[in-house]
Image (tube, rainbow over all chains, first blue to last red; front, top):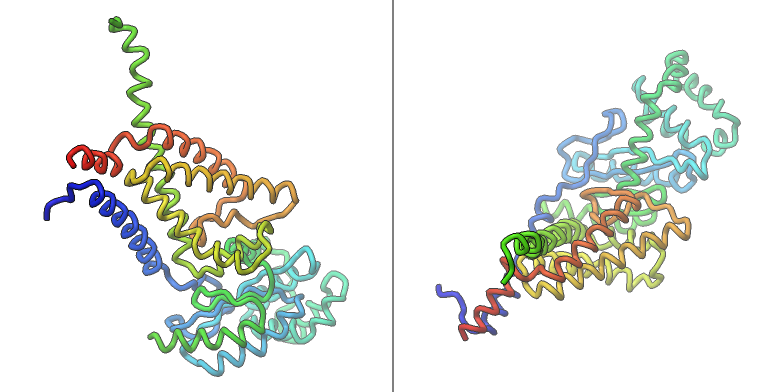
Length: 212
Length: 167
């Protein structure tokens, strides 16, 4: 095919090239974009690795709104079964909640002893109790109640690696513009708060599963 | 007639100027393509959250419109620069956007707003606001050079003009 010779035809061809390249580049990036499924210790995940839908929750144990998310997530896991993978991420709002990071570390330490989810549930159930206690002394009591090795638990709380693990989640949350808790990402789409998760998240999951 | 020595000392910068214009044009263009495509490929609500966090625009509708179209504008301006199509207007548009980004970041600093990162590359890269400020200032200078001499070499504008002459 001969290249266009008239100025008008050349202008049109040049404009078309710019627009085509723009659309192609965005579509290429969209196609290459993987669903957001971040790394996390195995004890902080539920559901199979190859699940069609991954829900990532950034949460703060001292945040009252996050407490209401626990039942919603359990409902989703029961409803979608093997199609759903759930990844829990720490995002303690340290400015507002003085014990949130300590609680996150305590949950990590329970996780090291294989009891992350039990500790997670206990922290939310008894949030009103421990969030008021000075220095998080109650956290040790919960470790005892769950039958954890208390010496190992106490040592773990002092381990800088545990603190670093929580901080890594916080950094990841910052990188994804988590500005409130709980924030959920369902295959990369953001749902802020439990109401959005219940109202729109379920519709989004159904849409994702239909697309398979 | 100039002597060889005179021509040599004044000639090299003059010879390099259009090449620097081309380099500036391609550099600014590529950065705009990457930053725009990463944002345009994600749901518009993601970039809307970033715009909202700068607290400069209050209307939620306007924020969503900006979040939808601004990344596309960046990509189109980027390809226009790389291909040298309407290179001077594209360089002016890119320079204008860069100065607006600089002003937006500076305003957050003056108001004491702490942003987790600049939000300028979507989920791709996460430069801090200070890093983005330096980058945008340097790119503004590059956009100015692209505006001055960017269309002279390897550009669709030249091809279009050749068409004009041929026509």
